[in-house]
Amino acid sequence: MAGTKFSLVAEVTFSTTRKTVLALTAPANQTVFVDLASISFDGTDPEGAKHAVKIRKGGDLGGTSAGAITPVKLGRGGQSTVQSTCGHDYNGTAGTDGSEIATELVHPQAGFTFRERIEIQGGEILSIMVLGGAAGTCRVRMNCEE
Image 1 (spheres, rainbow, N blue to C red):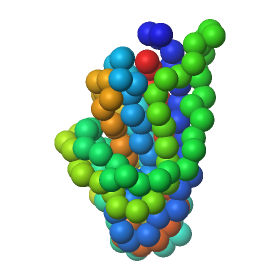
Image 2 (tube, rainbow, N blue to C red):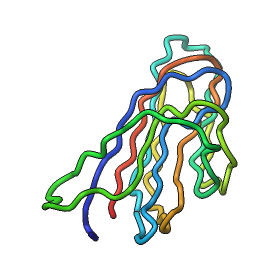
Image 3 (cartoon, rainbow, N blue to C red):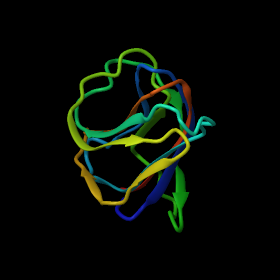
C-alpha cells in the first residue's frame, strides 16, 4: 500500500573484508522509495584507517544468510504490513556490486548520511556495504516508503 513509511535499524560488527551490513529487497509488485541511508562507526582511534562505505542498487547478495530485521513503521501505517524483505549482517560473500549510488571513505569515529531519494523497482535490492580499515562496529539505518 502506497504511503507506508518504515525504518530499518541495525548494529553490525565487521572486519577488514567487504560486508553487506544492511539490505532491502523491494516486493515484486511495487516500488519502494528510500529517503535516507546512514551509517556511523564506534571507533576509538583518532588516527584509525578509514572505512569504505558503498550504497549500491541492484546486483545480488551472493546467496548469503542474514540476520532478521523487523521494519518499524513510522507515523500512521494503518493496518498495512511492510512487504519488503529486509536483512542485516550478511555472512559469506558480498555478492555482485550492481550500480554504486554513493561511495565514501569515512573516519572510524564518524558517520555518513545519504539524503537523496532512491527509487527501488519491484524485486530490486538496495544495500549498504562496508570494507573496514580495521575491525569495528557500525550502526546503520534506512528510512523507506512503499
